[in-house]
Image 1 (cartoon, each protein chain N blue to C red):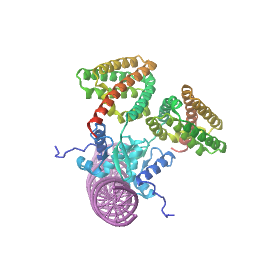
Image 2: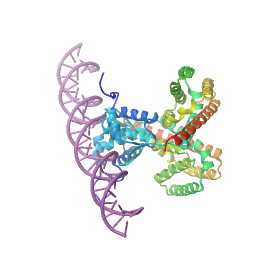
Image 3: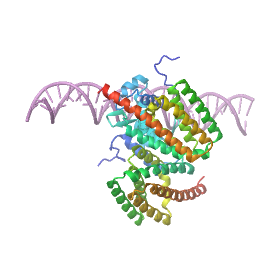
Image 4: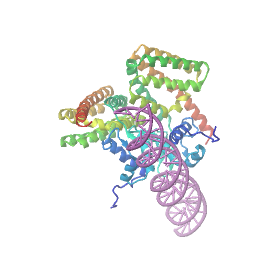
Length: 230
Length: 230
DNA sequence: TCAGCATGTGTTGCATGCAATACTGCAGTC
DNA sequence: GACTGCAGTATTGCATGCAACACATGCTGA
């Protein structure tokens, strides 16, 4: 075991630090709107500025930060409207995926999805919100992947990652959470029966109600923050 | 006037070199599949390796190159199937845009589109293929922009840029070219009448026939190249 | 003849130092 | 009291050098 504070020896330093900073942003550790100081991160992650600055360029491309020349990187601030715009795009992308997935999904893919769904249901029973959330995201990505269109998978993954943080608030309400699990079961069933048009509508409804719940949770949260700080 | 071979003083060197390399790729100067040597580009563009490597990270994010650790950057090779996959995504994105654009387009945006369309028609009359191509791309982007969804605009722009090179072949055939201009006129007309559903179908048909033409041209081109080289 | 290996060359990954730019605080003026 | 001008400081942008890695070539032994 090495005595370093972090253990960057997994691929290039650049890739490592990109993942680290990405996690810091999506977890909220780096607050939206805050400026990112290179020196601070460099010392914390035990790397030099070069790979960090490369990471910045990647994260800017992913829409997670903005870089102003000579004035540093700041974490992107997404308004509720911005997130809603992205959700609409994601719904649109899944609509495209739905019909294709119903046609093209392989049996192996369907089995993998069933397996993921069972694990997700178990996470729900255990009340393991984080684990549930990740499995949920994975399932949606796999449905899109089943459409066998790499461009679609890539775009969906990137857009999904951008707003991941904001969708986390969706399942705070136990009732909504239970319904989401049930919707998923029906969605996979419909995919297995390869009913593309129906699948499309179910996914759309699923996302709209999920986002509705997340939106209410976020707005309440923002209200509290607005009162608390300033 | 400076006596440098190139004039990089426009924003940061990093931004400059990114645009340069992007142009080299979309113009085909850097051939798909070929490895990009850092030293060669560095000397040609009169900059150091640091901004070039940052540019590589950006272009990798845009899907124009791939970087293998310790083994350099290579220009991405897109098969006809890859391009077709992207086109399907673009059609899907424009479908989402169509209904929203019909609802939300401002008068100013409609006027700007009409202006662009007139200039594009003039370019067609002049047989100015390059100019026509750019105006055409701009029009489609502006239609998407009119949907007033930034996420949609961003994703569309990025995906569109990725395969720009391949769509250029679409208007070699004079008959197809003339029809494309006419389709555009009707599309803008439909947008002005704010008939979203119809607009969606027209855009879809427009792209499918455009891509069909481009595809035939590309396949012929590939056949010739296959015979010529090797 | 050919697989396996050692060696050499070229290229990439990263750390560091310097120059240029943006930000901060303070003095001076109206 | 607010606003402008101006150092001083902090931070970023970039060039460069060194170390690590990948690839190519030739060599050895079977």
